[in-house]
Length: 215
Image (cartoon, rainbow, N blue to C red; front, side, top):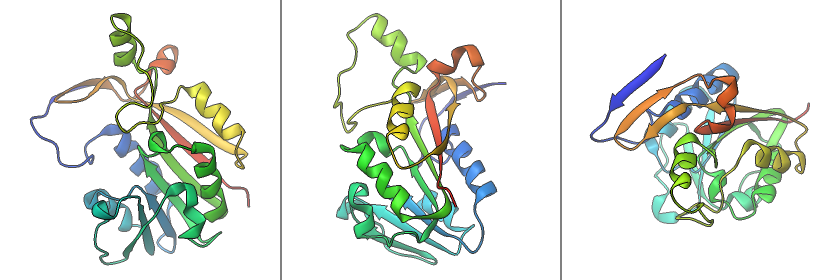
């Protein structure tokens, strides 16, 4: 099914399909007794949605000026994902979420391993990140030079192969990488399909990464 849309203004990322997909899997995986970790927890609207389904949510935000005030079952810590175990006790997190954060981290392998440390055995992490070779970027680069990184706030972006290399080098042994959205998804105009055709997998807009810590 092709989704068409024109959006004059957007509030947070609550309507973005990559977030909707992450939230759908999150709801299937989380328990009302769980402690959840959200990395990059500056958007209260999204954090509030996650917090409805767990016992406690810990939000980690790098920048003090972006760190919200605690509410209900949500508390925040200001800290760096690369040093996560300094702020969060090892093996205390049932489920972790990081939406569009990994591409901002200078030492992504260290960050992934820190996530492994704080997850309980059997814990799950759900990450989303943009595809370095998404269709729109490939088309743009046909007529201009290839984007060089760091770019804006992104330290890098990932192809599926890049993610496989990263995770295979990490402490995680079980994982899934799923393509999300094919087409134009961003800015005021949205023309895309949710289910990425197999032949176009490498051109998906986003990757959804599911990391599983062994019991």
